[in-house]
Image 1: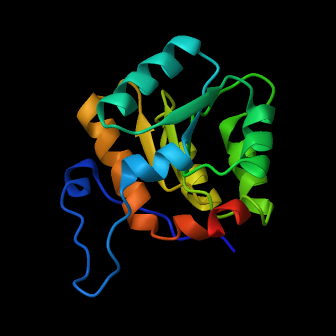
Image 2 (image 1 turned 60 degrees about the horizontal axis):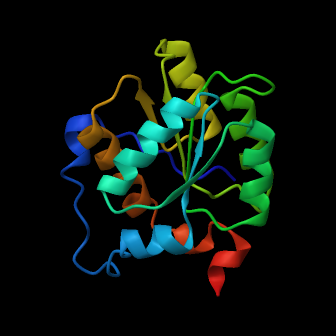
Length: 167
């Protein structure tokens, strides 16, 4: 089963309301220290820039330039979120997301695309496969952090996103 898709516009991300009776939000720096955000991009300079932005938000990350390693990390290690480029050698982002969603171990891990591909067909395909958000490059640091925080908070099922997270 594909998780619900987050379809908030950038201006709405800052105003996500939490129901009064909902459980307290997780402490995101603590969450990502235990379950880092996984960055997957074939450009090491992009990864370095994203890591700096996440560090400014006190969020922890790990990274890989290999999409097959992304799948392996997601299966073997607890991650709180995957942020991936769309176009990568070896396996594109859409195929990678499709494989993650097809695997019961990784199906519920939140997923954000951050890519230069901005055509409507790319965006529609990402939504249909269950992406939680779709961001286009270049991106402002505040917009990036807002999107990451919004997905982590809105998904609310991060504890069930990987078997290792339950304990």
